Length: 95
Image (tube, rainbow, N blue to C red; front, side, top):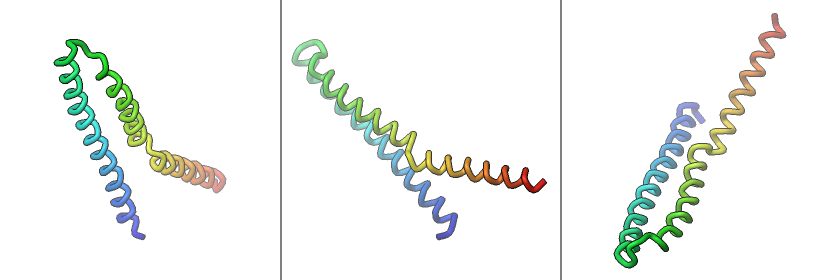
């Protein structure tokens, strides 16, 4: 496979993951604002609406963690560092 094709494919996957995260955040905000509105109309204080916000908030945090610290990116970074270390080692032994 061509390196440009691999780069494009990897970049496309990352962008799609970010777009999905943004959609997830927008839906989270919209639905939870609606739940808070219903809760305030019914009881004049936020009581039960806090629980879905906290539960879903944990899932949003996990989604953010996944997108930001995706294991494939970590793996690629470690591979690049190891290659650079090996090349540096080879260049110092040749001198």
